Image (cartoon, rainbow over all chains, first blue to last red; front, side, top):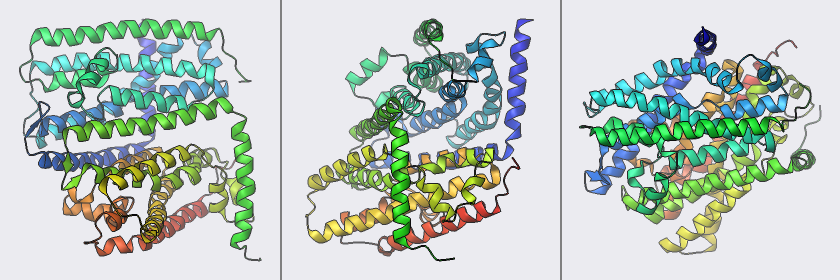
Length: 267
Length: 267
């Protein structure tokens, strides 16, 4: 069975993250503290605004959006660029390339274990707390299903972008600079720091043509929609699907071309 | 043993610095890309700031330009930690691999030797951005430009920067106990983004925490009050240089305590 070899990697990943229990504890506690800061900041911002709805979003909408964006970020961040970059520098990548599995799948599935632990230890607790704190401002219905589908596609898009950025490291031998550029661009243009609803109109149009929006803004907007209109949701998911396929093909092609150029020092 | 004086350390620092810069220059592409990455980070920060305050003209009685001033102030006061103490980020790797032991055998101060090894030139870009922002907002608010004001500004900037150095030292030093201090450092770094907003937006409990436990309020808020609100300067603002030195000293002791506890990995 083909899936079995992948699931073995998932299992190994889960066990690995349990090795660092202290780090996990610090992360959960720190995350909660950070969310409190976000809460107070936006509360003050809305209190000074004078109106309860700004750019079509109420305080609780913005709070849910940003808190879950942070949770999604923790969940999706796989440090792929660092992993690829370090493996190239140390030469370890040769061993990974020899494995009877495509490198891209190998990398993805070795991280899938931390998806599972991150989901249960950061995303789910955050989600439950947000539901309680905002007194049911999160609509619980069919939109949860759409949200789940959307998140899966967001993970794939995010991974494809990460993988492409990591491939650039084959040429530059710079990791920090490449990674920070990617992170800054993705976080800003995907609406992870500030909801896209707040953007000025011209920026909104530009962002609409880029894939980054599908990573954070699309799933979160779908989640916050109280009465999801099936055509609107279908359109958003369709755009996500388009980017999923396009970026997967692109990253795979880019990797294949780059692999011919690879120079490994020792190893 | 003869006690080494300040001049001795200054001379050594210059020598180590020259070596570090030379080795950095041999990876020119990496250096250029990292610098561009740093500039991108700052530009994205400004764009986020602009988008946010487009929708909310003031927060808690603080005008746009006053918050911009705080922003610039925090950028400048965060420069030293970026430039001189960047090696803290590698500490966990040295401790994990056992290479840290090499620092313990030098006849100079362990903390000094460890930190002096890396000088991060990228931080200078941030410094330029910060100074630009301060000058712009200074003229927009219409603050008087006197000799005394500039002196005050410089003193408070230097002491404010000690706080962030202290926070990062303490965060990095946790790796002597939990090995992987990356999460703690990453979290500490996240909080600095909120250091640039007035602390009055938080509830009393958090005001206390951010003043005495995790002193990020001293990075920009308290010192800036001396310049921005000269009529109602709280005692804590005047005390902030004292707190800067105190927290720095505490973090140094904590770091050294961890380093002394370090027993190597046996390799």
